[in-house]
Structures are given as C-alpha cells and as structure tokens.
Length: 179
Image (tube, rainbow, N blue to C red):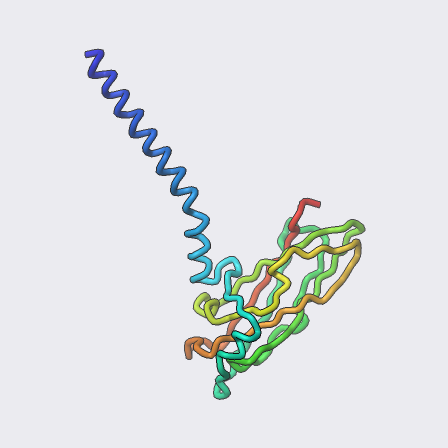
C-alpha cells in the first residue's frame, strides 16, 4: 500500500511539474502573441509605420475623402499635464501624406517624462493608418513648465475598405517614469 501511495504522489508531482513548465512557456509566449494581436487590431497603437518613400509608392485615391478625428486623454494618474490635438479633425485623401501636431505642456515645477500611446478606431482602419513620424515612438522629456508641439505625419493607405469614412486617432498621455 505504501508503494502505491508513493507512485500516486510521484504521478501528481510529475503532473504539477509539467503544468508549471507549460504555464511558464505560455507566459513567455504571451509577449509575441500580444504583439501580433496588437498589429492585427491596432490595439495599443500598433499601427503601421512606413517611410515617406514607401508612402509615396502607395498611390492616391483622388475619388475619396476620409475624416480623421484626433482625440486626446491624460491618464488619471499622470499628474499635471496639458495634452491636446492642434485640430480636432481633418479631411484626408487616401495615399497623400499629412502632418498635424499635438500640444503638450508640463504644468509642474519639476522635470517630467511623458509618453503617448495611440489607438485607432475602427480596428480595421489600424492596418491602413500609417505613421511616418510620430511623437509616440519615443519618450518625451519636458523641463519644468515646458510646452511643445509634437508632430505627427501620416498617410492612410488607399486600400482602406470602402465602408470606412471616419478614422479616430486617440492618444493617451501618461508619465513614462515615476515623478
């Protein structure tokens, strides 16, 4: 009886060890799986990034206009910032390169580092919204009370589905380092 009890314990221990290894492997694989998911859906700002030369080769769809809306929010725990788009919306022709700005200001008396995370809606549009220059690619260092305009250059791929007439680009601004 003691032998069969020991075999049962060994079997349970092996299963628990296998489960632990599988959980570790799954946790390790989540980062690339999440990146692929974000690339496909545009979640967490994973929209395409192209060079200006690549965008020039897309061609222009002169027969179509798309409204791009610009939205901004400040993360609730981000502290004293001002952050807003220079314009609320613009009409764009797919395939043409456009530039706009977001304005940010550090309202505190201390140096701060901020970061903006983009999101595109509807999700299907994220595959076609291509940024060639974006302040969201890097952390932004601000001196005390510093304000600046941060450029955003983008193009919408002319292959965007016909039913998409409005694209919303939303940025959430937050502290990149603890204050």
